[in-house]
Image 1 (cartoon, rainbow, N blue to C red):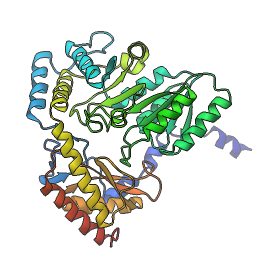
Image 2 (cartoon, helix red, strand yellow):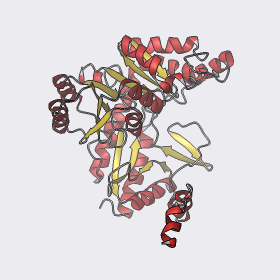
Image 3 (cartoon, rainbow, N blue to C red):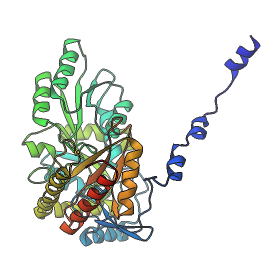
Image 4 (cartoon, one colour):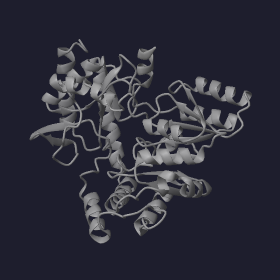
Length: 406
């Protein structure tokens, strides 16, 4: 009895899980730890790490604008004029005239009533979803949705139901069950437009059709699609010639900056603006980031050849990696995954690429299913054929060396 009382009264140290976590140290000791490598150059098509030049095929710099002189000059001039930060939230003292200009320009570009700019893309999903969805409402999400969507659902008080990845029959089953079982509130379907690991595009036509049938609203996370998909670079909805209720985008990819936004009807924007805790209680994006996004938007609107070159590069890499025998899943975007298999095999593959001058990203569980660890590659408008041919050459050598291809 005394022993049992001692066990019941024994306190668990909150940090015990930290003391027990040794995996990262073990991978480092093996020399294949792939994370947190400091880059000492501009994050362009080539980067410098530890004094060594590598071809970058692991960034989201889709239009190659992070090093564009016009973008950098705009950021520098804004910092000179407005200072380094805003020292407050948009709700109070942190709104600059260029924040308003950016929102107005984005609304015009996206062909919507209005937009609202958040400090990060992750925060955009958190703030939008949690403010719109209440305890009587339901969120319906794709099982492969981005972590920011999942966390936004957690912050809301709504019920969350998932459907199989990009499976519209399963989506219809979920929606039918909700309506037939007396769902009282509204339904918001939230999906990625382009899935950031798999590189595939959501089947938006069938999704929108199902949403209309069951009276649901649709929000599309177009972080990897704005600037990339559609004739004008407006994202997934434009790609399919459709309209959705809310489009979310980020500035950290095609816009070569930092921040995020939603585009929607004026009433939706006004509601989120006044009820999103993530918007109200966060400092606004700094002047330099705002000006950089504006300059990038100018280029996106006036230089469609960048997007055309991006797609030329993406099609080449998808075709050639497939010819080599690699499994690139169902990717049909500039994100092209190369399936390796087990987690540690992906780390070893990454290290061989790295040692040969190629920087890519290993993705392991739980970001992908067990046994489906992959090397995530992504391409830009400014990669040259010389870059791409070298990447293919190295992938072939490493793939054969490690038995991924024959």
